[in-house]
Length: 261
DNA sequence: AGAAAGCCTCGGCCGC
DNA sequence: TGCGGCCGAGGCTTTC
Image (tube, rainbow, N blue to C red; front, side, top):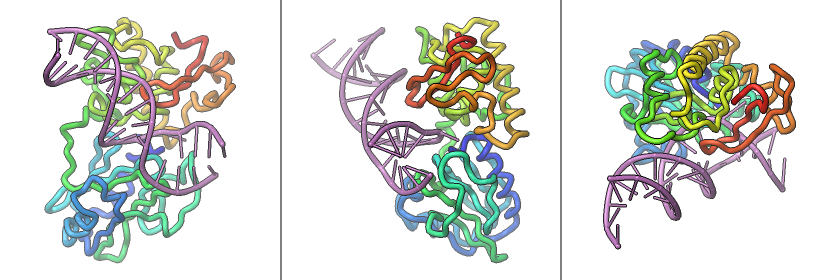
């Protein structure tokens, strides 16, 4: 659920704890799944002072005077500072918060708590996360980085939708965002990446930048134009044609039968 | 009851 | 035939 725009809002929220010292960290076994042991997070974070925040794709980072800390939010994770949500709940999943859905977090020397609230337990905490497996950040992607996303060395390459979702190629495009930018660019998500011509590439790049900009203003990935037709039997909000759907790149994908080709 | 917006692993297939 | 890389399917987990 949280895609890059939501994670960016969490990062902005986390800015408020810069300067604070961590007195205690905690996590359950699920949140610690990428760590050697469940207690690794608690042992690693104790005593660190938070010096800044960062983000690569959907991975949020806390810079400290020691280790670099990472948080992933899975599909239903939210970052809370005391009880202030980084965004106003989530479109999918419960819109309520419950103390027993707090899976990991940090207690700070000023009494505040920065916590991962995650009903579905797919969020993760990380210590010194490996960034080498992630492509360049999708939010403010450069033309050069974009060119690499759509460049395939041999064959047609994967479907463009699957390519967009590959975090090693570009970090931060989630399922909704991928559908939204292809919708705006008028490109069929099933198209082989290498089959996009120059005009289509420019259209996709333009749609990409505009989608990020617009949705960031609106407040998240679930406020895209495309969302209106994103339901079984839905109609395209642009031209009223029927929307199609299929699994592409492992995710449910919706596209307009008329203007995306 | 089925599907869900992330991510990881596994197994099959393709090409060298 | 052997092997690595790629890609899709399935699993995780809980909720609505």
